[in-house]
Length: 338
Image (tube, rainbow, N blue to C red; front, side, top):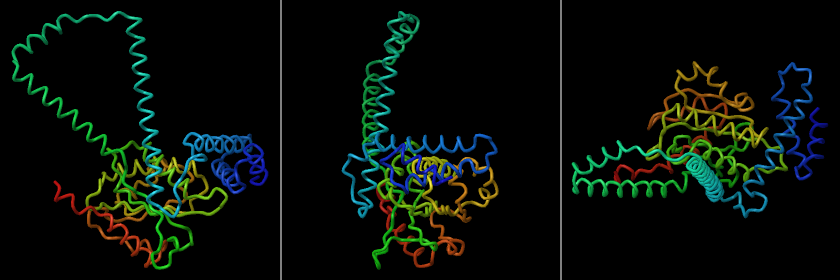
């Protein structure tokens, strides 16, 4: 069915390369693999058409086809571009919501005359008189300080730390690969700052980042190598928060980039989490959950790499290189600043 469905997709979306149509067709088939509905083939076709249409709308929404994107060789520039797009989208959404609330408030004010709470006015006047001018000045200063802090916080969150990397071996100049010869994306989950942006913004940034790195004309598969260990000077969110953020990210990635992942290795996870994995697994996208591989171990600051459990997926030399890359991102000046 894949061949006929991919041809149907190419007819509907002539701008889509053949490899892209095949990926979306296969992803739709996997989604209904265990379905027993009589109209299964129709559902598969509808799903593939809707998902590919959503992908084209997504590219159009963020102007990817018309934007001057950075070269894939400059990984940091790709991340910066993706973050700027994601933060811009988040701010536009906030502004839209603010305007909607203002419009609704104005409409309510026009429709219903405001009721004056005279008792409240009297209470406020009495309290103000009792506090005196000194307290008023102090309150004013506090208000100014709060406004200043809020401004500074917003400016700090105008960028996001890079958490996903496409590593290049400095000795050979080749992209880092796993033992199945799949190009690897190295994720440092503890660098996720949940206060800097929403789950949605983080997920969008990563989806945009991957969009630049992926070749739409290629059927290549990739490996996601997620290291959850805490690092010096990083945000280091609680583990359950990491799981929640990771779920949002991989769900978005699976929707926008179906059929791209050969394996997803997440490590190290507490043994308690491995014990309830069947429950947690249900919260992940089915396509992602089917290729996930979990490795247990401590994830605290200073925890060692569980090499013995990772060697089935990645060779020893590559693990050492990734560990070196990770250590180079430590922020050892945080304690001095604090």
